[in-house]
Image: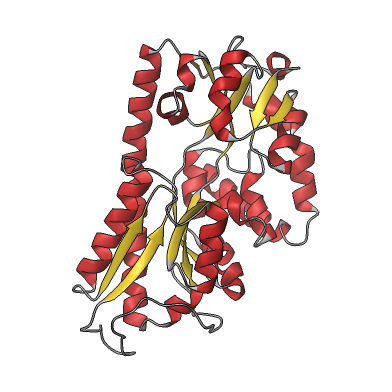
Length: 337
């Protein structure tokens, strides 16, 4: 992945002790603020710390980051807005949180957009992702890299979801997103928008029959104590993104921009291993909690049911160019296999 030339210059609130020249690294120290809403034990925090350490090392100490976990600087939306103004230099957010800043980010919420993890990685490490990242440059920020957030699947209190018939009528908690609501409805469930923090109690009290998320939610949020059937519907892969203040970026020399880009990409690779280990541990712990994992899901049947959402994307002039490129890459991946 590469960074394109910055598109515009804006005034920002900056936290700088020194500055840099266009041709060499600064001998002064620039302290940057990096925010996210995960706790210190989460792979995201560890990966962002790794990014900051690499940046400091590559810049010979002239660029350092102060990392603020646990939503200390506000919600994801608030952190995005602070990054726009330059009050925060960078933040990690879910791609869904960026939909209101650029409609193209809604593309990532399209069910079965990716044909598995390999296709997903190919897209996220290509010019397709970079072109999407740059669309918000005129809004004051751009995407620098991505972090794996896993594949979202359905898990339920009772019957495992292997076919659309199994999901029929089930009350499934979804994110308060029109895309998630429509997806669940088309797949046969009864979508129930709900804040994530309310899911455990809702499962426990039978307010909902199930929800959807990656495997780590079973253990980190104890959902596996109540929901015992985890079905690999593989309906959604939504990345986490590291976004950077455009005005702050333009304050750096090309060499500094390059080293930050290299550090960010290296942290993404580092995160892959962390996430894989975290997922494996979560599955093992969930099995000890009595959760059964089901891989014999009729994926093709579910894909057919959400086809109207794909057709809608294909008709959208903002989304269709990227959608088509993603599908073309899927064909290339399958050909190479």
